[in-house]
Amino acid sequence: MEARIEIAREKKLIGKHITMSFLENKTFELWSSFMPRRKEIKNQIGSDLYSLEVFTTGHFNEFDPKEHFEKWAAVEVPDFKDIPEEMEGLIIPAELYAVFIHKGDQIEAHKTYHSIFVEWLPNSAYTVDDRPHFAIMGNKYKKNDPDSEEEIWIPIKNKS
Image 1: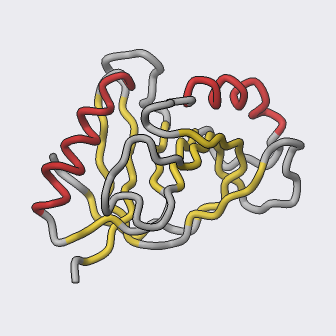
Image 2: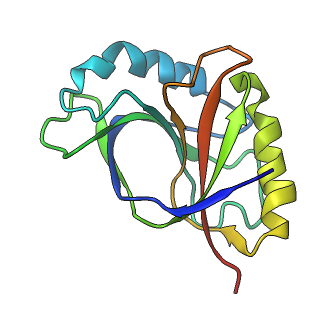
Image 3: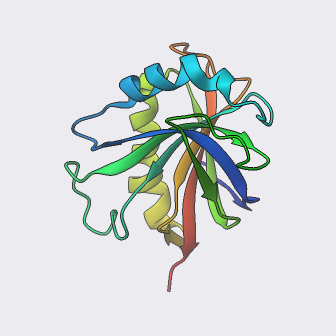
């Protein structure tokens, strides 16, 4: 597992979110409600889709798959001037991230996340930070395709 360490630039996103846990996964429900309406967001930057998780502080200190978090489906925008009804804005701050490439069908992404959190992170100079986690589904992303690629951005900070 290789990571690219970088400081993400601040990103403004508009989208929808739902509260869920890893045991009661509502990702399909979220994206099914977002995708038909994404064209209502008039000032999109590019065509990338963002899948985010906003966890409570300390979520990963003692991981509990029943603990709730916010799951977002969003796109990037330059500002929050025109937010469609039933959608919200979210800012990802310019901070340090470890960036990984998941190759393959989304259904196999749990294996990539397992490698990140069980293998890479404990052996790195970093620990998870309490900021949004996100995946960018760009032009190499293909739903339900073994040749698909997406970037996984994990917020990190130096171990102290």
